[in-house]
Length: 161
Image (cartoon, rainbow, N blue to C red; front, side, top):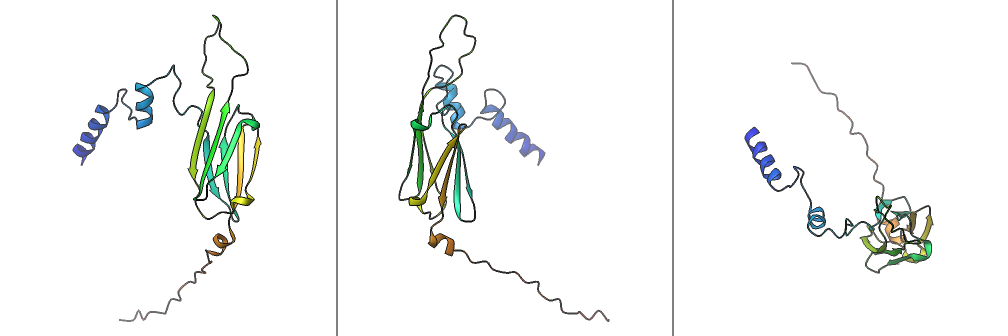
């Protein structure tokens, strides 16, 4: 068993340039480094959670103005968040040590997990966090039925030999 684990370890190390495994995205960024900016640097990080009566989508989109955000939900259940993070001032000088802040457009599409009432969706944006509340449809709320679990009665066993 130890030989198999060692062999897999050697194979993984051979696929890596630094001893760590790379996924396709990091390999893409390694070969196509556009001035230190990765292709997903502006992509919002998203959480999709189910609550009792709704689905809550939370996205981190710091530095983007509310007017520069666009939200769309398709009939087949995909949420698209797009927008633009624009640079307000130009900071190019000989005294600049780091310039890591990314600017540009982004678009992220995620599948929504169930039948939702898209017409009743609401969105709030505060301090770089976008919160979207999408109520479940009446049909979705009725799809599930609580099944109670009962403890099966233990019949007394005859332990006499």
